[in-house]
Structure formats: C-alpha cells, structure tokens
Amino acid sequence: MQYRTITCKIPTMSKLTETFVKKTSHPSSGTRKHWDSEVKGLGLFVGKRTKTWYFQKDIGGRTKRTLIGRYPLISSASARQAAQSLALEMSRGAGKVYQTGAPTLERAMEVYLARPKLRSERARYDLKGQFQKHLGDWLRLPLDEITKGMVAARHGEMAKVPSAANHTLRNFRAVWNHARRIHNLPEAPTLAIEWYEETPDGRIIDDLRDWRRHIDELDNPIHAAYYRLLLFTGFRRSEALTLRWRDVHTDRIHLPVTKNGRSFDLPAVDIHHKILEPMRSLSRDWVFPAPKSRSGHLECPQRIKWSPHAHRRTFATVAMEAGVLEEIVGRLLNHTPISITGQRYARPSLDALRPAMATTCTALSERLSID
Image (cartoon, rainbow, N blue to C red; front, side, top):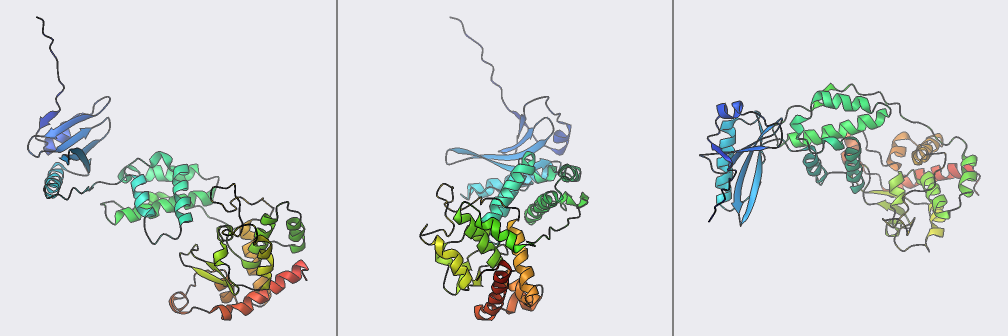
C-alpha cells in the first residue's frame, strides 16, 4: 500500500510584538496572515504595501472579522488592547463591530448620507453620483490613505469645470469632517487646495416676448406648462418637476422638502391655477407626468435656450423692479435669511406675502403681453 504525503499550509503563529510587526517583510504578491499566539483572534494581514490589524471570532457558527486599523497608525500594543476589548464584548453576546481605524471613503459617504439632517433625497442622490463619477477610484481607500497631494491633483484634473471641481472636493471635505467626529483622523487634506474662483451665472430672460414665442411653439404642452410655472413662481428645477397635486391648494403651493431642508408654502394666485389647470386631467398624482420615466414624473423637459435657473433669476429681477422689497423677494424664493431674527423668529404669513406675489405676477404678465 502506498501513502501520499499531504502538506498543509498553516498560518503563522507568533507573538505579534512591535518588533515582529516592524520587521515583517511585505510579500511580492497576495497577503500573508500572522496570528497572535497569546491573544486569540488577533491577526496581522500583510499585503504588498500595507499591514493591517484584524480581530476574528466565530459567533453563532459564523466567522466574524472586524477591522482594527492600519499599522503603524495602530501600534501593536493598541491592537492587542482593542482585540481583548472586542473579545470581551463578543463573549458577552454583543457581537458588535468596532472599527478604530479609518473607514473607507465609501463607508464614510454612506454614514454621511444616512444623516437625518441631510436636506433631501435629491441631495443624497447628487452627492453619491458625484463621488462615483469623480472620486470612484478612491471609494475603497481608507480615508487616512487619501493624501493632500492626491486631493490637490484631483482638483487640478477637474479644472475645465471649476464649479464641479470645487463642489466635489467641498463635499469630500464635509464627508471627511463628519467621519472625523468618531474616528481618529487629521484635518481634511483639502487644506492643500487652491479653490477656483467661480463667477456666478447671472443671466436672466431679457426678452420675455421672445421667451413666450419659444414656449408657445413647444410640441409638448406639459413642457410648456412646466416652464411657465418656473417663471411665475421662481421654483427651482426639481421643485417644479416633482410637484404633486396633493400639494397644490387654492391659496398656496406646498413644497414638502426644499434645498434648505425645510418645507415651504408659496402664495398661489390666479395665474398659477391658469397655468396648471390644463394638467389636471393628465394624472391624479404628478402635476407634470411622464409615464415612461422611472419616477412617473417629468425628468428631462425639452431644452430651451434659457436655463431653469434663469427663470428663477428673472422672477426675482422683475419682482424687485416692480417695487417688491429685496427681503420679501428672498422669502418668495425660499432663501434662508441672513439675520438670526429672520432665521429663527420671523415667519411671514401667506397673506403677508400674497400682495408681493400678485405684484410680481402682474408685472410678468405685462411684459409677456398676457391679458
């Protein structure tokens, strides 16, 4: 009878002292795993460039591995202490995941987006898309591996669109600072950035009669009504697109969530109902329906030569030229007041704002030559 010799690869067992960890070399490929001979479950995973501490324990028949952090940020003594604490907690049945090292950018982003104070679902969607598009190769990196040089270089790579570069990296800074509240992180590496100067696009609709001709010639009446409502309310693009019939009332149009995180009621006057009335029979839910869209509402209205925000700026400009006070115009646009009194105490009623809305709509109608 012949016997075959089988060689089993047994993970290294050593006391993972500071000296041992420091002298352990990096493999040319793959990951070497070293397990501590004294603290059961404490492991050091050595890759081509990094050395990472983990704690591993079987809970309920399943192996649970918990990240402790990177060496040398987490020393041998700190890792041993963390592993002992985790072993004690898990033996009590807590089974919680503790992470004393830096989270990945993706994890930090998810925690940031889960905040109840985040302004809206649209804000969550936009930030996530922004990170996937511009910072996708960083998402799996721990935050403490994203350096000032990397941040400054990425900002420079996006120089063709300065506003996008600034906005993306400022959002990155916000995510970093949020993670910093519970993780031992240094100041955000965006310190290295020389922010681009941004020139706001202040364009308005100069010739409202020309605008009216373009809107009247649109093939789709839903798109035309959408642009008319933008002009006569000053709504932001998404506020109008996601408007529901349940929020359209005789005396007001209600926005449940806005850019500043608060709900908002805009005084409704006759012209608003005149614009919306032809839409009534199209949907019981959305004011501007689009059955083929995933959301059920209009998402991509036909493009015209004036942006949605140009409509908003035009509303504000005509209001002020018609004699409406700047502070009242700001209220109609749902801008956050600058003063503490304006932010916390003063809440003008719908009836107080209605005359200003009526004045603005009358002035717009006159410029459009609407009877």
